[in-house]
Amino acid sequence: MNNPLLSLNTGRFLLAFTCVATALATAAHAQTDATVSMAVPDQHEAVRLDNFVVSASRTLQDPRYVSSSVSVLPLEDLQTSQITDLHTALAQVPGVTVASYGGAGSQSAVYIRGGSSAQTLVMVDGVRMNTRQTDFIGKSIAGGTNLAGLDRIEVLRGPQGTLYGSSAMGGVIMMDTAHGSGAPSGVLEVGGGSFQTAYGQASVQGGMQSLGYSAALCRGVTENNRPGNGDKQWNYSTRVEDKLSPELLVGLTFRGIEGNYEEPGSLQYPSPGKADANSYLATVYAEYANDGVFKSRLTTGWHQSDYFWLDLSGSSWASNAYYRSTREIVDWQNTWTANPRITVVGGVNAEWSHIKTDASVEALMDKSRGVYLSTDLRPLDPWSITAGLRYDYFDTSGEATTGRLGSAWRFAQTDTKLRATIGTGFSAAGMTERYGDSSWYASNPSLRPEKSTGWDVGVDQAFLKGDLTVEATYFQNKFRDMIVANLMLNDSRYQYQNVSRARTEGVELAVSTQITKTVKARVGATYLDVYDTTSGRARVGYKPRKSGDFDLQWQATSAWNIGGGIHYVADRMRTAIYKISDYSSVRVYTSYEVVKNLSLKFRVENALNRSYEEIYGYPATSRGYFGGVEWKF
Image (cartoon, rainbow, N blue to C red; front, side):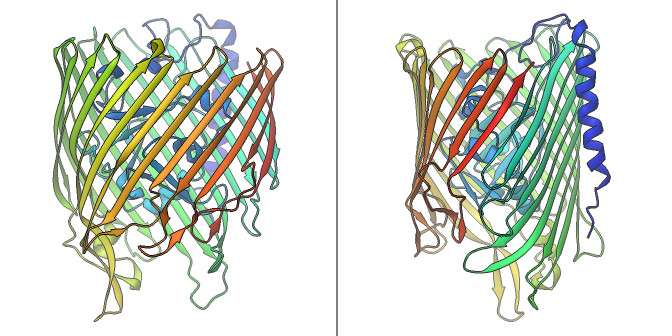
């Protein structure tokens, strides 16, 4: 079967390289210095986003007063560590577990605080990307996402249904396409290494007068280290926005991921096949801001995901599969800052979803509407309070009401922050879960949304004038009405039912330190218990009780950087009875600036050549050596 969106393959080149050519053509006319900003230069003041948190309240917020548990991934440090994929980047975050079905490009499940991948919401450019219906497609996309073209990644932990709606039960991963401003700048990089790996990427951003732009294009291929396990990926993105007046900003974004993955199956049950997974997101937005008091943003989005599975097993049970999910989104958010102590955020959201499978004669359709209101208060200088409420209605799944309450108290003299939150979340049933999918699954129109209630308490402490920071959090989350497929004895088919309950609890620890002017380190660790409480108390599979990630960077000279890290996972269950072996994976990396802006890079993955599996039966790649050349302009 041909890729139904093959015409977009040519479009990615035209889109990305048109933006690159535009950037280079305007280089001589750029009038401002480059900076990472919220929008574009000249007619307004650029705001450095690394000084703020966005996901906790859906608007800029000083992290000193945020009550939620949130991590902002340092993209500059990730680049220095030569981490280029979303899978490896998220695995560093406390409370986040990432499990892949083998080598590069394979499906990757992302769990936050023990919730399933369908209970972890991914937001890109203000648009919800995944649902229960498209969970397996989302896993394919997560395994192939490159970090190029992004200028922000945040991980918000705990139930977040109040601001984000369905699927935000364990937490939210928020990503934004890069904003451009100032003199054009960019990166060109090529490289390769073990397993017949080769890659290349180009990115550019800049602006002139009221216009800002960015574009990125990445290509990667590898054979991994199992026969019939090759992967080919395209990643591309662009953003163009214009400040039409001091109050009005308009813009658009486009992102695409196209993956072609050869799946050999597990070692125990080989099931060779090929998977084509594509995702395309386009947004058009307009933002009105009035002197920092009132801001209104209207975003329209179109998101389409395709998944085609070609079964090459030759078995009598062999079966191909095709899915296409298309969604149109309208989101209108308003922010009112009455004074420095009161901020109110409210909005409405509507989505139209269409699911087409090879088993359905006509596309299944659903429509959802949501309305939310949240407020941040600072009744006293050190004290902040957050409270919010949301109502959602799905044509197929019914209604859900979620709420959230948080508080933080900051002691300025000791640079200490105490924080606590409690909130609820839900996950609407997928359309094929309700109405069936082929002869294997029977319909169940009475399915209810999954629901959760979670709380956490934590402390953030800075030492040595900020050179050492420690964040510690204890959390609990209870899930009910969880949707699982059960075999119907009188029908010989499966049916999705609201039958399960679960509980998660644990501790998250994050430490970062600037040891000397040239040496810095980061540590993230999680202790997690996940139990199925439907009948008794049974451990849930693939949720490690202990995990940690460590990274150390040394700027040996002004031109030479050396670093290394280790990722550790222990005490996992494949089922409630069978364990999976613990593992640790070590990586080392170095880069050297030969001449100004031209660097050589080298890294070793799985440096100790450990044999391990993130998912039972799917071995991770062995030791690999990779190198590249990077030019910044």
